[in-house]
Length: 518
Image 1 (cartoon, rainbow, N blue to C red):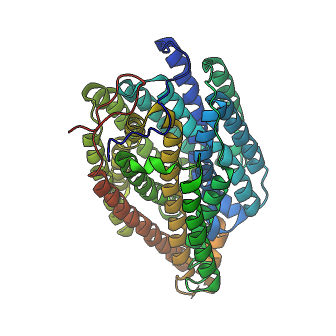
Image 2: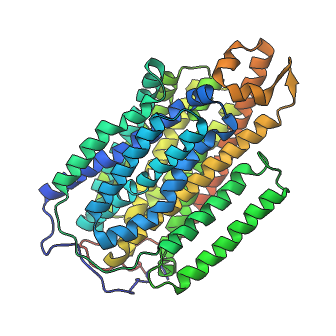
C-alpha cells in the first residue's frame, strides 16, 4: 500500500526537454523565497498586533477569527490552486494568488470594525492559499527529490527568518504608528515578489485539459466552514446542546457525506480518492495536521501571554517570540543541508523533532501554570522551534517523492490543505478554550464582570483595581497554560502517527514515484 503509484494518468515530466541548470534553479528559488516571505511576515505581524487590535476594536472572544478567517479561506482554496496550476500553469496562478493577497491586505488595513477585518482577512486568505503550495509545487517541478533537501531547507529558513522579523516589525509598527499599517507593509514586498517571479519563472507550461471540480471545492469549503463554526461557537455563543449547534453539526455531516459521494463519482475531483490509497501520503497528512493543530493553536497565544500575563510591550513580545523561529531556522538548515542531503533519510530526524517538540510543549504548559520566568519559558520556545524544523520541510519532500509527477501538483496542495486544516482547528479550538475560561471566570469582581473587562482589552485592564487586575492575569495565565497542555497532547499523537510513516528512497530524477524499502 505504501508504494502504490497513482497511475490514473501516465507519468509526466516537467515542461521542457532539458532539465533546468543551477543558475535557473537559483533564480526561481530566490523568487519563491520572496513569495513565502510575503506570507510569513504577514502572519507573524498580525499575531503580534492582535492584543492591540482587540483593544481598539473590542471582541476578545472573537479574537481567533481574525486568524481563523484567514486560515479557513487559504485552507479551502489550496487544493483548487493545485488543480488550476496543473491546467493553466504555475506562473499565472501564483500571479493571481499574490494579487488577491495584496487586495485583501489593503482592505484589512482600511478596516474600521472587527467584522470588517475578519471579512477582509478572508479575502487575503484566498490569495494566501496559493503561496505556499505553488512554491512547493514549482520546486518539485524543477528539483529531483534527492537534491531537494537543500532547497527546502533554504526555503524553510527564509520563511522562519521572516517570521522572526515579523513580530519585531509588528511590535514597532504597532507602537509607533497603528495596527492598520501592519497590512500595508505587504504592498512593497508583494511588488518585489511579482517582479522576481516574472523574471525567474520562464519555462513553458505543458497544457493538459482538465476539468475543474468547482462543485467539489464548494462542498469542501462549506463542510469545513460548518465544522469550524461548531467548534468556535459551541460553548461560547451557543450552548453545546443548543438547536443551533445540533443544526450546524448535522449540516457539516451531510456536507461531508455529499462531498465523499461526489469525489468518488467525479472524473477530476478536487481531492482525488486515489491519493488516499498511498500509505505514505495518508500518514503524512495525519502527522502534519496534528503537528500544526498543536503548534498553531498554542503559539497563537504567545504574544497575548507575553503582553497580558508577563506585562511586556508589543515590540518586546515580538522579540520573546523570536526564539521559536530561530529554532526552526537552525534545524531546517541542518536537516536540509546536512542530514537529508548527506544520508537521504527523513524519518529519524522527524521522530526526534516531534519528540523534542512534545517535551517543549509540556515544559511551556508547566511554566505558564506555575508562573515561571523567562529563563525557563524562552529555552522551551527555542526547543519547540528546533523540533518543528525537523518535521515540516521534509514531509513535503517525502510526499512528492512518493507520487508520480502527474499527481504531484494536487498531492502537494492536498498535503498543504490538511496541514492548514489542522492548524485552523487548533486556532479555533484554542480560541474556544480561552473564550470559555473568560466567560466562566466567576462573575463580578469589584463591580466589573470579567468578560466585560477582557472585551475591552489592555486599556481597561491597565486602569482596573489591583484585585481585578490580578484576577484577570490569573485567568489569562491558566487559560493559556491549558492551550499549551492541549498542544502537548496533540503533538504527542502526531509522534505516534509518525511511527507508521514508510521510509522510501529519494529519487534522483523526475521520474515516477519511489517504491518502498523492503
